[in-house]
Each structure stands twice: as structure tokens, then as C-alpha cells.
Length: 420
Image 1 (cartoon, one colour):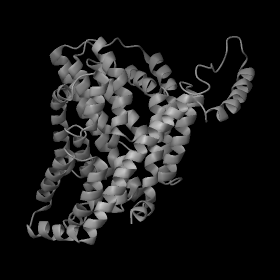
Image 2 (cartoon, rainbow, N blue to C red):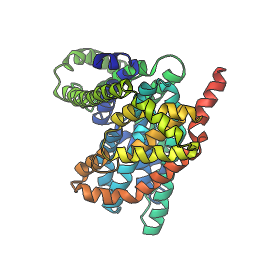
Image 3 (cartoon, rainbow, N blue to C red):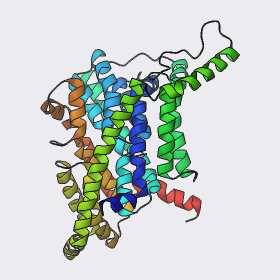
């Protein structure tokens, strides 16, 4: 049954590919180029470095699908930068810890893939539903940062001009293209989420090793040497890439990325496999059916049921990993939501936002541990730094729960365009 649980869910195969893609992008210098691009856009506004950090988290979320990976990749660079620019360290840590949660809300998202596998809903529709909520959450954080920066008189950075925007955008283009490749192929009907994830892993490897050349056998090899003609540069680079490709098999940096991604994938898939086994036991014993009948017998209206859902998920988020929560809770809550007329995509986004909050609550909040590792402070210090921003996430949860069109507008629009 353990084998069947995984083999029946082809969508789950996308998870290790997205993790590998994220690992190459985190190590391969994509994060610092995205941060530079975000700074060129909003760095001149008061609180601009923090706002650029949120924007960078949003962009990186769209290429990684993971919340801890987003915090690690962006936070390891910008927290130090914010402190040097005069921001309180607790402010910087709190912003990044919370903004990193966008990694599982903005598509592609590993957590959304797990929900799709658990409930048999469309992963593509889940991804589409996460767009507007992700942008809204990023906007809420930026507005709060601007207000706080005005109150605390945090300085703005000088405007560097449109040349810097164009230059930084060109530098980040390799990473930004991944968003178009993954999401464009899914919504263009060219590839399934799993196929797009596989392509993203290969593309991220190519960008990190042969494009930006921050890791691997071509590390620090220039694209064009001084005085070299364009034709000579093209032929030299082509030859060097052909020679470097087999060397990647034994390259220490490439192997480390593969090993790190493998460790995370094995851990996550092990959790998923065991959660699926547990969910199978629950289903065999008809526990979800009995719980569904019990909750329906309470006569709760849809809004009351969603209150119960949020309380259950927020409580579970304190003690369990998001994927395990979704695989255990979704089969229980899903049929009740259908009986009450709640859209399964809307329920999915509510569950994902609850998982975001779970990333920030002890004792299992992964983002807290990642930020503690970056800053060198205790978990208690990070919790205190993240708490004011966590209130914004709770406000956001209320909006998502009771304004379903925030989640459903794009999927419904896509259905109309396709004539469904």
C-alpha cells in the first residue's frame, strides 16, 4: 500500500524536481541577481531594501516552490545588507521570516502539489489560484514596511536610474525565464506540472553551471575575454561547455547541490509516504466518514465550518510538517467542504495559507530555524522578531477565508477562456 500510495500520484514526482531546481538556483547566484533587480525597482522608496527583500522573496518563490529555501536564499544576503543600511536586525529578520512563507503560496508550490495529490484536484488550477493571494500578501507586507519605515525614520536608498533597472533585469533574466518556462508550459497546455518540474530542474542546472557560472567546472570562466571577437567567443564557449558537461559528474560543488537536494527530497517524500499510509488507515476505518457526519450534524453554516478548519489547521501547524497535515486533514475536510458548497480550490488555498502560518509557529516552524541559523540568534529571539508580522498573516488568512474570489478569480477566468 505504501508503494501504491506514491505510485498512484504522478503529481508527487514533481516535488524532487522542484527541490533540485531550487537547490541549483539558491547556490548558483540567482538569488543575488534577483535581489539586485528588486532593489533597482523599489530601493529608492523609504523602507525600500526591506520592500525589495519581499519582492525578491516573491520572485524566488515563483522559481523554487519552497518556503525554507526562499528564506535561506534571500535572507542569507539581505538581512546583513539591511542591518548595514541602518535597519534594526529584528526588523530585518522578521520581514524575511514572514516573506519567505510566500514560497508555498506563489506557484509553483510543493505544498499545493501535495494538496492536489491528496484531493485529486487540478494542480494547474491550484497554481493559478495562488497568484492573486501571493501578490496580495506581498503587497500587504510592503505597505506595512513602508508605514513602519516612516514611523522609525528608516532611510531610503538613492534612485539608481532606469539603466540600473535594465542592467539588473538583464542579469536576472536567466532566473526570471524559469517562471515563464514552468508556468507558461503548464497554462499553455504544453506540459503537466510534473513535466514542467523536470524541465525546470534541467534548466536551473544549465543556468547555474553554464549560464551564470557561479558553481561547477566552468566557475569564473568569462563569456568573452578581452580583445576576443564574438565568433571566437561563441566557438570557445561551445567547446568548453561540451568538455565541462562530463566533468559535472565529479565536480564537488555540483555533487553537493545534488546531495543536499536528495536529502531534502528523501526527507519530504518519507514524510509524505508515511502520512499517506496513515491516511489510508483512517480511510479504511472510515474515520473521515464518521468525522464528516459528526461535523455536518452540528449544522454549521459554511462560514462556521471554515472557522473550525482554521482552528484545526493552526493547531496542527504548531506540531506537524505541512505536507503531513495536508495528507491527513484534506481527506477529512474535503468531503465536508463539498457538502457545504465550498469550492475545493478555495479550501486548498485556505489550507496553504494556514501552512504558511505553521512555518512561523514553534516548535516546528521551519522558517524560524532557518532565520535563526542565518542570524545566529536563538529561536526565541526570532519568534519575537517575527511576531508583529505574523499578525498580518492572520489578517490575510481572514481575507482569504471569507473573500473566495481572491483565490477563485483567475481559475474561473481561465475556465471561461477555455470554454469549460
